[in-house]
Amino acid sequence: MINYGSKAIHEEKFINGGSQMTTTTLEYISKNDLAKSLGISIATIDRKLKEIPHVKMGDARQSRVLFSVGKVKEYLEDRTFEPEDAEK
Image (cartoon, rainbow, N blue to C red):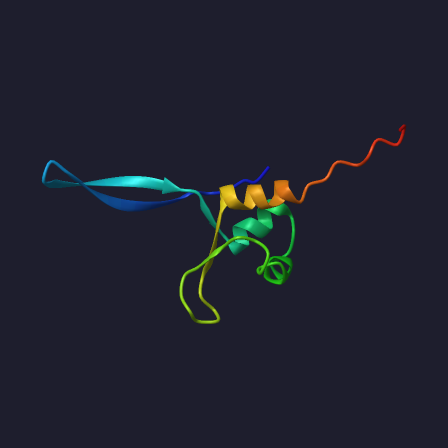
């Protein structure tokens, strides 16, 4: 199970010619939060960065990286295997 703190963003919706500000909760977590949730090091996350779906917030080498909780769950589920039954 992944424990995470969701990030909130503000979204402006246009309704009947007017605008209304709403808050939408997105389930994105930082590299640190992902490492803590999975019980692995940040270095492991860095090594697997080409495999794990993520969003990089800029072009600089040190730009913030965020991970969609749903996509990380899918990534982990796709790589989960069940051991074969030894009694076959």
